[in-house]
Image (cartoon, rainbow, N blue to C red; front, side):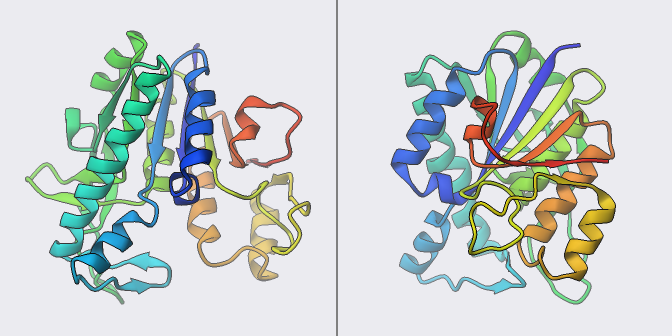
Length: 258
């Protein structure tokens, strides 16, 4: 069974041109099938401010009204996605930009209103791998932005970490899937102020304890939930850390365990 690497890069990498370029050079050199998933960085927020559209964030999550959805679509599926694809082509990595609507690859449903109305935010309900498999078989790398659709004509803003996790699960029957979450830290830290306090392995019992101790909180919670969701649905490997973890076996990072 072939290994498929699914790599998600966060806004902190996208927002830094030099770091992004270095990552894409290294990513292009990865042999075998691979998929890149990216967020939007701070560009959508900057564009919203320029256009006079209010940015609403509740518990670290963006409220997506129609005006915000337009800005996110322009930014994520347009400028950011196409710039990444162009840079990969410059590094001889043949790639194709995707939203979940393209190839009917990721279907979501609009998040139901409970305590908060998040607007046009989608929760993934199905992954179609057939089109993506054709590309991978022909050495073409899909590059996903954080936009999905509901198969009724509506685009939906969807968490990029979740998209990466669901793609890894969707391919797990046909590939040995490895999922890498890349950001600016060396991994999950025991002490935020200490870059070297990486927790190298986290299992479900440890995860519960770390939450109770307040070591894992805020934005790291949904990320780790996506990690455990993947590892419990036949994804072979899930890691969190700097991009170097993919290319350098001696680097320090966090591995999620069953």
